[in-house]
Amino acid sequence: MPQPTISDVHVDRPLTNLSVAYIQGAEAFVSGKVFPVVPVAQRSDEFYTYDIGDWTRVVAEKRAPGAPSAGGGYTIGTDNFFAQRYSVHDDVDDLTRANQDQPLDADSDATDWVTDQMLRLRERTWATQYFGTGVWGNQRDGVAAGPTGDEFLQWDQAGSTPVEDVSTQSIGVAELTGYRPNGIVTTPYVFNVLKNHPDIIDRIKYTQTGIVTEQILATLFDVQNFYVAWGISNTAEEGATDDIQFMLGKHLLLYYSPPSPGIKVPSAGYTFAWTGLTGSAGEGIRIKRFRIEENESDRIEADMAWDQKKVADSLGVFFDSAVA
Image 1 (cartoon, rainbow, N blue to C red):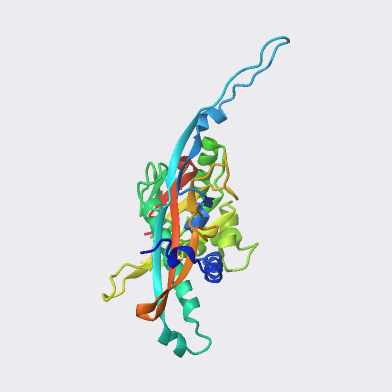
Image 2 (cartoon, rainbow, N blue to C red):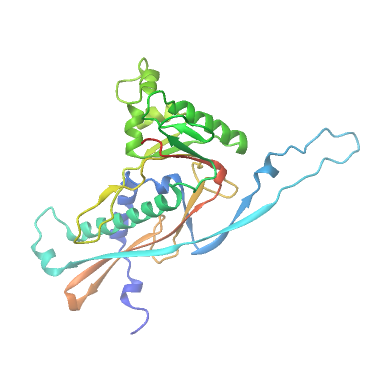
């Protein structure tokens, strides 16, 4: 086979732009917000880590005339990432395209579908790796009665105190790291309980309308972002009975992430998106369209490469089984 092939050199810019617009509007998916996306030119590389103890220890002191200044310093460590490549395609045959009625657009629909597949996979991967029991060092376990130690009373139980529970942990993270958590991500199950919780209703009854929104909860919990993960996944094989459910269960993650990632900028986690693939956009996605003549069809193919990394375990608190 001659090299390079046409599929290697042709990236469909209009379809890639359409795909990027879809990503920007995909509000159901939260992983790229909780772990901010860092575009990287290399598929694998190292990034620097800093010891929190070195940065919070005070070694500066009063200086006498003619005396040297107090000395100190900090250690630098490294971690690494490897952006795994993922791909999926949908074939648009000539007969379907020729026979479609307005406003149908088979190429646009195929682009939406392959983009949705990429985002749904990235969300499910993040949920599996970073939104579950035993992932975060600071984990609080919800129980139906009699909480002790690191447990808390589940928020759908009478007498529970979700605002106090989260606020206490937020103060603890700030005291340990110097960074106050600025984000919460949870699921529709927990969101529904919180917005109907008597304690929360009582707190806003004189200042807000009767509808508790994500923005109101962000204010109550004193964070900048309150995300509800509405993404769903069908875990059944094709041909079997559908098994569709929310991806993130019944938990809540309190975390810190910066408004924009950068060197010496701490975050609970980052999503390293490889932009090195020819024609890929900021999220690391590209859309190719190429001809498969023997099938009388055009293939719409999505490529995306990323690696999700927990960068600072101390900047996250996981509330396991927040509701029953």
